[in-house]
Length: 445
Image 1: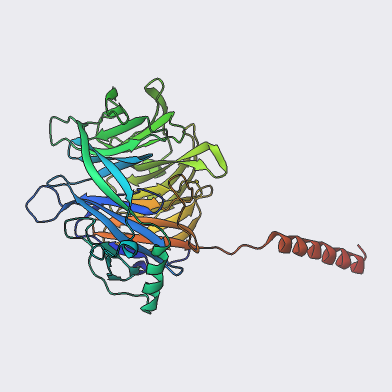
Image 2: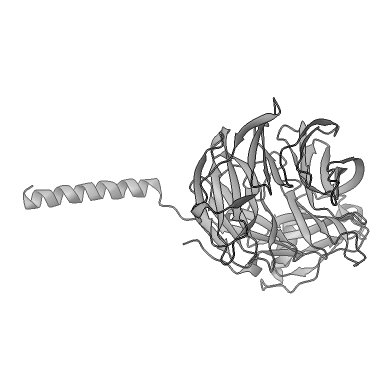
C-alpha cells in the first residue's frame, strides 16, 4: 500500500490569485501563473517565481519575483532556457505572449553593506518563505502562515543554506505576441502551448480545434492543421522532437509526424462497458536508462457518467500501442512525468489529491489525499538532471509540485525506499539452497 501523508506537510506558499500553470524555470526555481481574469474583482493576474531549497529536514521556498500581467490571466505557459536569456510563452486569452526572462546574479549585501534588499523573513508552515524586498515592485501574493515545524533555530539553519549559493534574480520583459486561436462562434482561447525539446518548434492548441506549429523563437506560423472537431485540451512533443500528440474534447488522441505534418497514429483502447471516455492530459517520458527510447502517458475520464467516476492512467509505447492502464476511483485533472522517466504523478478533480506512480509498472508509491481543497490544476516534478544547473539535494527519492485554484503551491516528496542490499540477497539464497540440501540428505532424498 502506498504511503499516505498529511496534506499540510507539503505546503510551500499561498498566492493571492488562483493558479493554473507550473513549471521549473531552472533546476531550483519554480514558476507559477494564474489570475482572476479581466473582471473587476481585484484579483491579480501574473507570475510568481520562487527559489526552492532543502534545509535538511524539509523543502522551503523563497519568493524571488512577482510579475503582474494587467487584465490578462495566464492560463498556460511553456518555458525554454536559451543560454543567457530564457523564453516564457504564455497563453493569454486568444494570444500567445512571449516574454524574455533575463537572469542575473544578485549582489552580496553583506559585502556591499547595503541592507535595503535584505530578505524579509516570513514564517511558514513548511519552513519559511522569504520575500526579497526590491525584487518585485508590487506587493507579494504570499500569505504569512503559521510554522508547523517547530524550533525557530531550524529557520536560521535554512537561511544559512541559501548563503552557500549566490542567488539569482530575474527580469521579465514582454516581447512578441501572436494570435493562436480563431474560434468565431464564441470567445477564442489558447488552451495549451508547448516548446519542443530541441527548442526549434512551438505548438499551440485551443478552442477552434486547430493544431498550429510555429518556428521558435521567431513565432512564425509553419503549419495550421485542423486536427480536431472540438477544443484541444493538451499537447506534448516527443523527446526526440519528431512527433506531437494532441488530445481533444472530441475524444480523440492523435500522434502527428512533424516531418510530414500528417497523422501518424490514433490512440485506440477498449473502454470499459463501451462507455465513452475523454483523454484529459498527455505527457511523453523517456524510458529510464534508455535516453533514445520513450513512452507516452495519458489520463482519461468518463463522459457523462452519473455516480462514482473512475479515471484511468495509461501507458503507451512510442508507436501508440496501449501497454498498461490502472483505474483510479475519481476523475483526473493533471499529469506529470519526471525528466528521467522513472515516476509519474496525477492530480484528481474532486478531492484535490495527488498520487505518484512508478512509470514502468504504474504501481502507486505515494498518495496524498486532499492535498488541495479544489481540483489540481498543475503538477511538475523537481528535475534530477543538471542541464539547467545542479538539482536540489534532499533526502527524498522524488518530489512533485502541485498547484490549484485554491491558490496553494505544495510539494509532495517520496521518502527513500529501503531496498535489500544485493549481497544480503545472495547470502540468503545460498543459505536456503544449503538448508534444502541438508533437509534432502536428512530424509534420504
